[in-house]
Amino acid sequence: MGKKRTEKIVFENVKVLDAGAKGVSVAKAPDGKVIFLPNVVPGDVVDVQTMKKRKAYYEGKAIKIHEFSEHRTDVVCEHFGACGGCKWQNMQYSQQLFYKNQEVYNNLKRIGKIELPEFEPILGSEKQFFYRNKMEFGFSNARWMTDAEIQSGTEFDNKNALGFHIPRMWDKILDIEKCHLQQDPSNEIRNEIKRFANENGLTFFNARNHEGLLRTLMIRTASTGEIMVLVQFFENDKANRELLLNFISERFPEITSLLYVINNKANDTLYDQDIKLFKGRAYILEEMEGLHFSINAKSFYQTNSDQAYELYKITRDFAGLTGEELVYDLYTGTGTIAQFVSKKAKKVIGVEAVPDAILDAKANAERNNITNCEFFVGDMKNVFNDEFIATHGHPDVIITDPPRDGMHKDVVAQILKIAPEKVVYVSCNSATQARDLALMDEMYQVTRVRPVDMFPQTHHVENVVLLEKR
Ligand SMILES: C[S@@+](CC[C@H](N)C(=O)[O-])C[C@H]1O[C@@H](n2cnc3c(N)ncnc32)[C@H](O)[C@@H]1O
Image 1 (tube, rainbow, N blue to C red):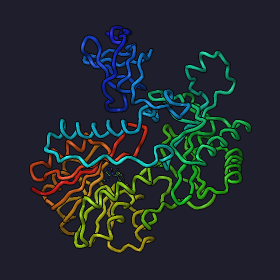
Image 2: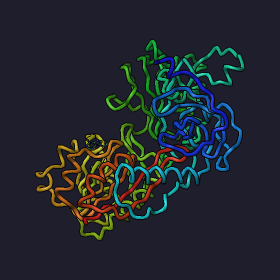
Image 3: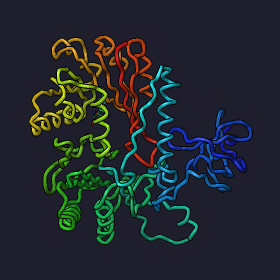
């Protein structure tokens, strides 16, 4: 069975037909089965080698391109292909938008099975590169060798890397020279840290043996020009830690917030870590329409700040507020949407599970002199109950922006029970959004839909839907 599944077949002259979920393209094999292919563009004609055989489909890779699609464009990044980050970089941006829109439409139609209005045109991102405000890089002493490096036969003494995990290879890191996702000085900071660490013999993390000084690096930039840098160390080596942090601070005096963590636990997530301030302040400030939002190392903030502004404007427009409404902002994070719409509402109630985020939301509202927002912490399915509604009032409009899994069914049931006039549903996963919309279909009609692209060069897409009571 295992052998048959991995038996490799070559199909010649196959036309790539579509771009599917997860950023892989789709073709059809002569036997009628679907083939999933990375790094090709619909319209290409290619020879395919299958890598895996499943009951209903193959996973393959293009080994020769006979015809290039007219929708191709030149890639700008030297790491394209090996790096899992920007899978659609070889596809013209207009086509990326076409396939993102199609994915939302197909999900709402096939999973939601609901009646849909004509979509408002997908909103593309003005910046197609250097649009991210947050990047996380990993240190490794076992860098990933690209095909070209292996074929060159060059021996590398130093296998240290600072970059991204290779998809599905938990212990391999692709060394990055220039990433096109975050504005400068992101690349310079990362490369200078790597150079200094190598020159001074600071050790890079070994994920198999669990040893080494340097573990991860996070860089956050804001439209205000403020910069946050956080270095995560594995070993607790004060002398070398301070050597590196002093270097960073002197080499980049423009850093607003220089932080570090010593984490010798199995995983490298920051959420449960004690974050230490080395220099500056513990947060950076982001600005949107005159509002300021503080972002600390653990805060969630939409990763494309410019496009977040567009997303929020669409959300506010869909909500159609007059100044008289009581609005609930479910999954409020640090209360950004709540504060953004607050000028046009009587009152806004934000609910969120992460206590630190709610602390930020309250502090931000105070900083912004907003007095008509209140924030509450807890798991939505528990907090958003009858008693909560009785205490805080019956909402006229609910804005909801859940995580990728969508809303818990009890949360959907509660929305149906209190039946506000309007629900604005912002989603980063149109498949779970479609499931939730189907549950609300009897009471609500979908009257507006507008996908928004927050992540050019990737297959990810955000979608805003307005539901109005039938
Ligand atoms: C997509 S983010 C939206 C954040 C915010 N609306 C914004 O634009 O910045 C989803 C938020 O839901 C929160 N969350 C996840 N599961 C939750 C739950 N069960 N109850 C309450 N909040 C939850 C996450 O912590 C996160 O802040």
